[in-house]
Structure formats: structure tokens, C-alpha cells
Image (cartoon, rainbow, N blue to C red; front, side, top):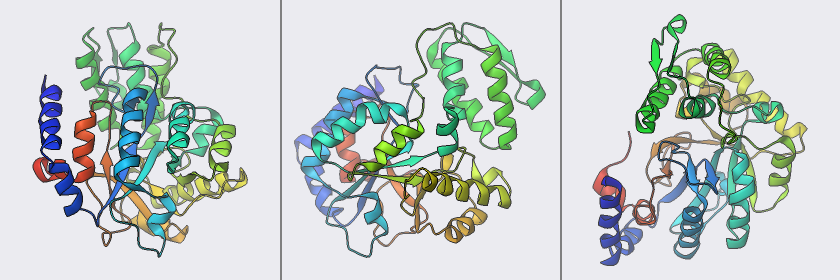
Length: 332
């Protein structure tokens, strides 16, 4: 009900011309859209990362008509972007982006940048947090004991909304722990919560071959997202350097020249991360802070317009114009 009210409210705002007004007010700002996956299947709202394909098509149609979409590399160019500029980004490099989003973008002639995790793609593994969430949502088991990792005992009731909160909470806690703990928890959950569902995981990443093909299209670019999707702020300086440099090295070995634009896994970084990025030749980085990006803003903490499974077309329009952030405030 709340989502319907929000959509209705922003529909009325658009109807009376407020998006037009705010698009003019914020013409000098850049809209860096943050997507993850695009699915032909409609998932419950808990699968926040997965936009339903028909919604994505509507969003891209609107974006192409009302905004000037530029390439990711234009964010670090010396050239001034046009007014009402927008950049489309995809975190992680999900396989469904290659299968579902790419045809839409080609049809609309819209460029995009994908932040890839080549280590996982090469091993055909998934992002740990995505896999954990999917396992919790699909399992028929009633719970699991994670006390040995100081994560307590988890119960999995039939209610998917409750499971959603459990999955999000667990992933939030894991992001604060060493990556080795996350790997151990994933392995345990794989064994103990093995799904009896025939549905494949919607979070599979592009293969090496698909990433190479994606990067060969002049419309699309690849940026770095670490080698193994490690939360950088919870690792030491040496591991941060290795995760960043090995990511770029692997991509180049595959014949992909990554643009010097980076995306922080889980949006987390520290001063050591910034030092490592600059030494690796990275010129800018996008965050998960929700909002429009000022042209003169910090290039290593660029804001993005967050788009999820529950973002209706009217809220989407309000986010792009800046009306949404004027009314709701930006994520700090």
C-alpha cells in the first residue's frame, strides 16, 4: 500500500509539471543511475537488486527522451557534460544484464558502464551477499545455527517478508566482518540450506566470454569492482591493493581495457582504499550514497540515483529530476 501511495503522489507531481521544474533547477547535476540486475521474471520486493524487464524498458524509454545519456568515461573527461546528463551503471556484472538489459540499451542507443568482478566471473561464482539472500529465501529448512561465527541462531519462517529482513540483516552484519568469515558462512549455507527449488539463482554473474563480448560493444564500458567483491573497509591495506590491482590486471589479460572508474563493493571504503585507487590509476569512484552528483563534487565519492525492484516509473522520474530528493532527502 505504501508503495502505491508513493507512486500515486509522484504521478500527480509529474502531472502538474514539477519534474519539468526540478529538471531545470538541477540541469547542471549528473544523474548516475545505480542498477544491478534486470530479470524477465517478477520477483518479490525482497529481491531489491532485480528490476523487472518491462519496468526497465519504461525507465530507459523515459531516460532516452528526457535526459542526455553519456558514457561512464565522460565522468572523468576534461569535457563538460551536457545539461541534464545521465550515466547508466550496473554493479557486479550480472548475467541477466547481458541477456536482458543489453538488447534494450542497444535498441535505445544508450551507453552504460558495468562494474565487473572478474575473479568471481572466472570461477563462475556469485556475489556472497546475493547468494546468501537467495539461499535463505528458497530453503525449506526452518533455521540454522551460526553461533560459531557469533551470528547467533537464525529461524526461517514461511513469511517471505520476514525472511527478507533476516537475509538483509545477516548480510549487513557480515559486511562488517573479515571477508574470510563471509566465505565460511557462504560455504556453510550452501551445504546446509541447499535449495530444493529447481529455479536457478537469478544472481549469476557474466562469464569471462560474456564480459569480453559486452566490452567489445562501443556502447558499453567496464569499470573495476575488485577481484572478489571484498568489502574493502574491512580488509587490511595490502589486501585492498591486491583486490584492486588484480581486478584491473585480470580484465586487461582478457583483452578488456577498463576505464579508470571504480565502484566500491557494498559502498564501503576508507583512506587506505583511496590511496590504493590513486596508485592504481583510478581517477574517480562511485558510491552508494543516494542522490544527484554535483559537477564539482568529490570524484571519489560520487553519488548515484538508486533504482531497485520497487522503484515505479513515477518515482523514477522524480528521482531523476531531483524532486524526490528535495522532498525525501538524500541518503547520508
